[in-house]
Image (cartoon, rainbow, N blue to C red):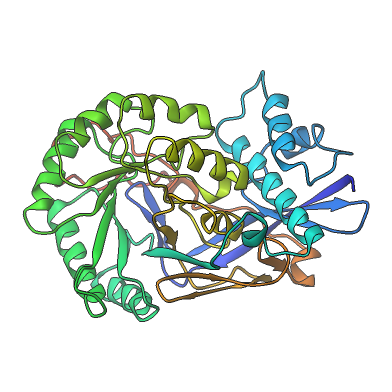
Length: 387
C-alpha cells in the first residue's frame, strides 16, 4: 500500500453556545474544523483532524510510503521540518496526517483503532468541558445539567479574571454534578493568563469556598520553575502540556517535577499522544488528553493507556457532514466497532469546503496584552477588539 495524495477540507461545528476562554470567545458558537483526507493506491482513505499548516511540505516526506508505518512516518515528518521547525500550527499539520495514517492502518486491519492500539474496553472515562467563559448562570446550568444527565461527575470551567465569579460558577457546577455523585470534581482552566504571585493568590482565594481537583495552565507552558513553585504552594494538582508541540518540550516540566497531570492535545495526533503517555508513565504521572470535539482518533489512544485519567469531552454535537462512530454516555466516550478511527464524512463535505474561521481578533487564540501583568484577583475587562 502506498500514499498517493491528499485533500484538504474545512467543515464547521455549531456548538450551540458561545465558546472560548479567558483570552476571548466566539459569540456565534460556530467554528471551522480542518480535515485532511489521505489517499492510497489501494483505495483506502484515511481521515485526520488537526490543522492544515505545513501539509504540502510535510507530504513530501510521506508520499509513496506505506501509511501503516505510522511511527516511522511521524519521525520523517518531524525530520522534514528540521530547519524551519515543527512547532506551533505546523505540529497540527503533522497531527492531522498522523491521525489519517492511523485511520488507514486500522481500516486495513479491519479493526476499530482502539482495538488495534491494544485497548480492552471501548469506554473512555471523561470530564465535561464547556469552553464556557461566556456563559451566564442559565447557560452554564443548561450545559452542565445536560452533561450530568449523560453521566458526567467531573467538569472543567474556563476562568481566571474574577475570583468571586469563578467561585460562584464552580459551586454551581459542583452542585449540578452532585445530583449523581457524593464526590463531584471541578477544575479550573486559566489558559496561561496569570503570573506566579497572581496564580498563588487567586487559587488560595478560590480554595476558601470550593475544592479544586486541578488547576490547568495557570502559567506559561514553558515556565517549568514557576509551575514547580506554584505546585509547592497550592493544594490542587497542576495540569498542563496541551500546547507543547513535541515530546522534547515536556523535558523541562518532567525534570523540574512541575506537573501533576500531563496533557496532550487531540489536534497533535495519535503518535504524539502515545509518546507523551509513555514518557509520563515512566515517571508515574497520569495523562489527560484534551480537545475531544470530533478528534476521536486520540480518544482511541486512551483505551490502551495504563496511566489514562480522564479525557476532556466538550460537546455531543457532530460537525457538519461528519459521522462519528461514538456515543457520549455514562460519563465518557463509548467508542464504536467500525474499522478505523471512528470518523466518516458524507458526500457533501467531501465535495466542498468552508473558510477556516476561529474567532478572529476577539477569539480565544488571541492572548491579552495584559495577561501575566496583573497582581489582582479581579481583573479589568479584556481590551476590546480593534474595529
